[in-house]
Length: 193
Length: 292
Image 1 (cartoon, rainbow over the protein chains, first blue to last red):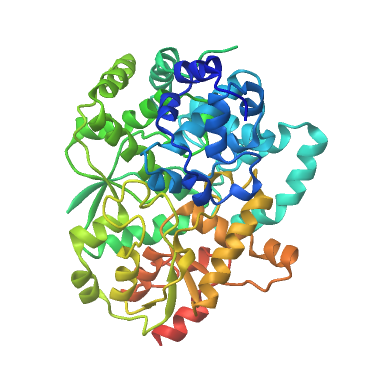
Image 2: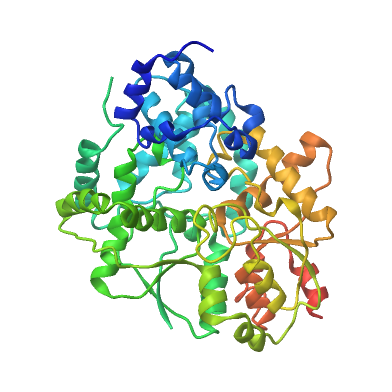
């Protein structure tokens, strides 16, 4: 591990939601031990924090680990230093995406489309969301994914678990968007590259 | 007892059997519900890809503020994602009053203000603490007669705050199942995550999680798995055939909502009351056998 190099850590503290919480980390590794997807991460959360302290910007911002979070909150419960590890990872992923990195392509598409729908409608359209995610990666991949998930769609439809009408905008959509725009301006982690 | 019911996006679609069974089962226990007019989505667990933390807080604070303006009932959120997103705002406001000011600066753009006074409760919390297992047991007309059920708790209905149950060894769902006459089987993976909101984009990894949860439940004798979360229900139920194909397993275990079991044990119609016909892996056979 390289020596302590504070410039990236400062960047994280200043721009990433919950970024300053990293200061509390004592490198015990309980977060990694408790994570359901730890086996699939390139760096466990503990190591991500250590890489931040070592100034390894590229490694952190392009790490798959920061977007492999299922949001199960186990690390948050287990951390002996009360770091909301999950929130830090979400903050890092948000910041990395804003800076043009794509830690996990499919999850990034899914999350972005999810938020786009919230912003557009105020609600989620469960039919439309997967369609948009599938086709975010081009027509051919879109058709492949659609065919791959056709069985799930049909089962849901046949069992009355798919809303047939398209989701409409909530009445207060315009005022909701104003609130969210203001929040984006005020919030941390919003700074574009 | 009156509550706001914030059912969220999923319970109108993929989680329809949750809402359809929740209403009659809870109303039979004397609960009354009012909708939060013009509610919006909670942002669930993946919105961070597109939104800052403050924007997600404001999104949830809008619902809280609208509820607070209209009345002072507690909000019941059956979907664990809705629950955790709203309760998180309340917790962060309590920890740091500056957060409330930031949130209100944004809400003001739409003429709203949140004082921070609305309680958000999970459906299990309300059933266990406001109604109580005794009252639920009294209402049972068709007990589940020792049917072995694995009460899958998952994540966001208790973690991280543990408002009404232990985050390490949760018991509430098991006590509720027992009140219906079922035998709640212990299984160590009752709190292992199913993949939640990233199941779809990270399916290869998440199938593994679901496989290990279901096998654990079955190895401990469960005939059914119960849940109180629309993501858990979807992830545990819809992909069992894919797991079987990938791993050569023979999973075929029905996943039911706790409220569906309540409706069934309260003697309601298994279709109209318990909405069991909406489950993709049919639980009726096992339930009818148990109820008699």
